Length: 166
Image (cartoon, rainbow, N blue to C red; front, top):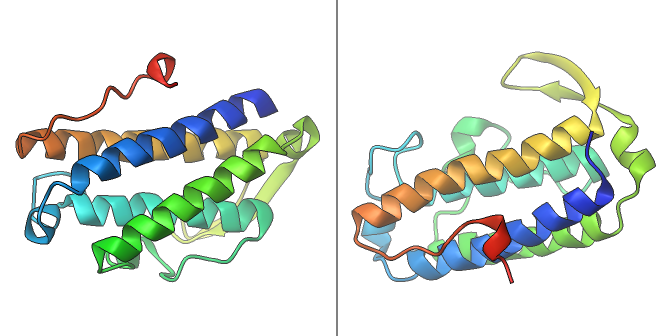
């Protein structure tokens, strides 16, 4: 089980490391950001789109924020074609997650969440703390893929360790 303090720390980490990752991505051309780098979702751009989509989808399910513009995982890879739009929306979503996590209480984490999973094709129920943990883990997992792709372009990436966060 996690605590509200854990969620707040992870939300702050998410925002901090997204700023660092996007600063690195700013150094690439649009063509390089969209180049197939051999990662799961092929390109940096598609992977960042998917991370944002996941954050938007989980926040929609957790607190009824607007749903992502793409209804499914396949569409998640292209929901923001323009890099500037993707970056703006991702930064705004990070702020929203941080605001939400800062005001989270234990009862909200302990309650169950019920939703329909398109990827599983069925209704699902889990304690919210499991879902919140998954949301932060999902971000970190795919950001690691972006980090690896950035190194292929010779971009010096930020230290991504939580203890190094200011």
